[in-house]
Image 1 (cartoon, rainbow, N blue to C red):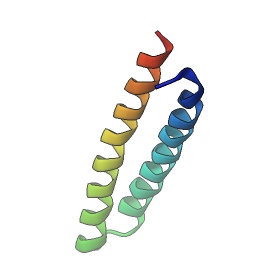
Image 2 (image 1 turned 90 degrees about the vertical axis):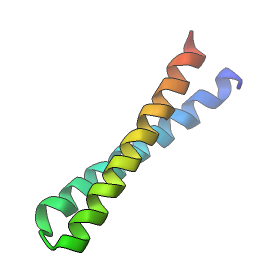
Image 3 (image 1 turned 45 degrees about the vertical axis):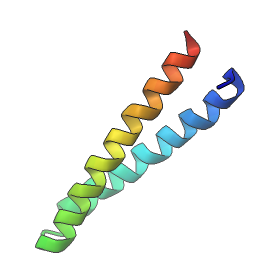
Length: 62
């Protein structure tokens, strides 16, 4: 990947981080079992995607 693509990957990482934050707020304010489980699952998946996106960005910057 070219260095020109890293800002897009970084902004995607920030977007996923924001989605993860929203999922965490959903878990806090909706203690219902189904909504809480869905929020936790989404937070976990988006957290992994953020980690992968940031690893790719920092790998490109080297």
